[in-house]
Length: 210
Ligand code: ATP
Image (tube, rainbow, N blue to C red):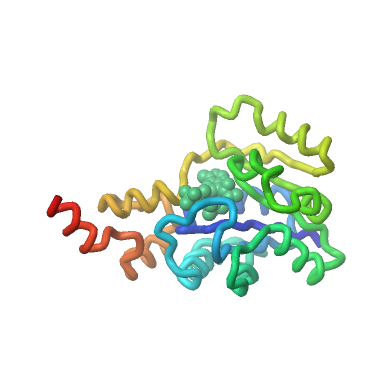
C-alpha cells in the first residue's frame, strides 16, 4: 500500500492545501492520504493559533470529500513539539509494509535539510512537492537533484501554483474581508460560526485609544 502524509498547521486549512492534496491523490495513485494537523509546529512560529480540536474539525470539513483521505490526530496526542521524523517512525511501525510519501509545498521542501533527523526522514519516506509560487526558476528541480544526492527520493508535482496561505486568510478575516473562494465553503461557515481569527474587541479598543 502507498500511504501519503500531509502535515501542517492548517490554521486554517485553505483551498491551496485541498488542491495540492486532490491533485496528488489523483496523480500518485495513493491508497490513502493521512492529513495530520500538528499540535505545535516545530518549523515556524505559530501566530493566532486556534485550538487543535478546531483545526482538526476544519480539516475534516475540508478533506472529507476526497476519497481515501483521513484526518489523523496522531500529532495532537503529543504534549510537546511534533517532529516529522517521530511521526514517520510511528507510521512506519503502524504500517510496516507500506511505502510512505510526504506531501509538502515548496517552502517546506526547500528547507528539508534543516529538519530534525532529515537523513532518517529520507529513509522512511519519499518526498513529493508542489510549487506555491510561480517564480521558483527551477529551484525545485535543482533541490530535487541535491536532495537525491543526499539519499532522498523526490517528485515534483506538475501543478500550477496557487499563492495562497493561512496567513493571508487570517489577515483577511481580521480585516473583515470575505474568505469566500479561499477556503472550502464548510470551513468558511465554521470560521464564521465560531468567530475564529477575528480581531478581539480588546485589540480594537487598544488601537482606538492610541
Ligand atoms: P501559514 O501562512 O500560517 O504559515 P501555510 O499556508 O503555509 O500557513 P501550513 O498549514 O503551514 O499552511 O502548510 C501545510 C503544508 O501545505 C506545507 O507543506 C505547505 O508548504 C503546504 N502549502 C500551504 N499552502 C500551499 C499552497 N498554496 N500550495 C501548495 N502547498 C501549500
